[in-house]
Amino acid sequence: METKTLFTMKKLFITMCLLSMISSLSYAQNLRYGFTGGVNLSKPTGDVEPDGVREGLLLGVKGELEIPAIKGLYTEFGLQLSTKAHKSGLVIGFENEYLQSTTDINYLNIPIHIGYKIKCSESISFLVNAGPYFGVGMWGKQKFYRDEKKYHSASDIFSGEYGYKRFDYGCGFNIGVEYAKHFQLTLGADWGLKDICKKSSYKYRNRSFTISLGYIL
Image (cartoon, rainbow, N blue to C red; front, side):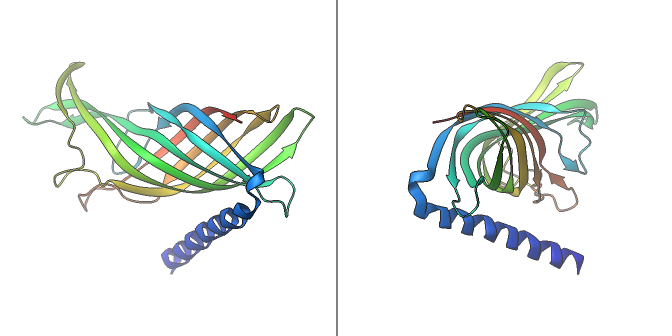
């Protein structure tokens, strides 16, 4: 019952985001677009035991559509290259020995968020936004280390019984400040809702925290 209710809430939230974006399209003159770049700090959840966080690239384009019905309300959407990764401590290797490993998965992400801006002064605004994201894995790599020296690497991480699923989805949020209506500094997080591990007995969900700087034209 709880799972069914959670699924219904997720569908409702995604529908609201999409409807808000569609309704905003009728006000194309309120469209702003720009660029964003930053870093992901990833630490997945599930059966994996990450050894701290692992850094990854976040780079993309974004758009904002004002929703005129409520001052400060807007829809944000984008296309991002997002590296979600993890490093683990000791894993059993190919010859029953203990190794260290790193995994990097590069996604093409599409976030669709609803946001709100509060004007603090003539040049500074506080912003917050939240909503779903959808991602497809483009490429990735796993590396294994023994005594801090690379022992083995693999780039076909989406194939085989122990590989990862290409598609991912989840929810995220950002908080930050906007300066002079152009520069944006944000902190955020993405929580993966999909188990992306092909092996049914092993759970793996993406989770990352982000720091980014954007410029809106």
